[in-house]
Image 1 (tube, rainbow, N blue to C red):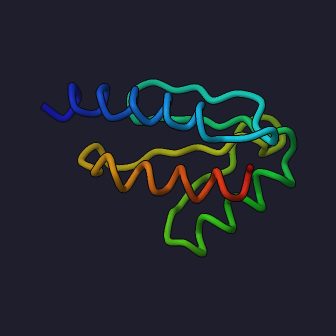
Image 2: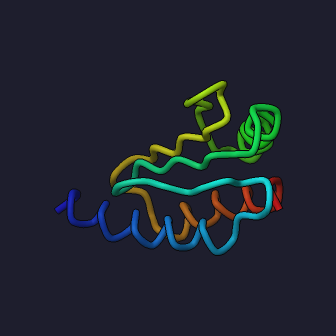
Length: 94
């Protein structure tokens, strides 16, 4: 039931990210556990990527000019761990 679970956990993560992420973010979008955070510019995205990596979370810069942060966790990720990762981003992107 990983597909159903990823839809549920992903929907929660999208809503949580939209509530928590700040003015440095243009848009949060996704489907299931594939989540994209469109930052205002590539410098903001790269800084957030590096900060997340220091905290043990791997994000990939993607999209136009590298300004979209791609979150693609394993389908079995614990919802609280994913929320913790979003909190790390919220502190950086506040």
